Length: 106
Image (cartoon, rainbow, N blue to C red):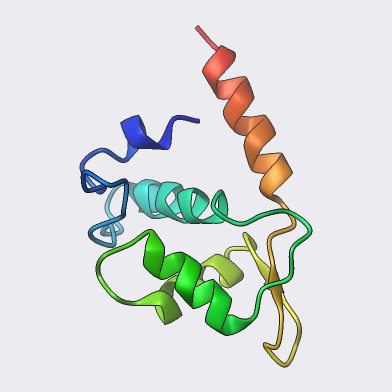
């Protein structure tokens, strides 16, 4: 999926999310923003909470990595150990496949 096109009104010139989308449109843009963030994680890599926050901070400007981390987890885009000591993205490959299929459609 070309997130830059879909999210152009939410991204700044550097590709960072500049605001959290409202829930209108049944949360479509929230879902897209979260998928955009999930695409920044490497599959098979374990991240500390600090590393997750740093990664999220690189890609947004509204300074709320805790909310983003929680939303990513609650929507199943990242997983974590019960004690919060490690996070990982285990569905990125699925997102990439969906994205590739969407780009092939006429």
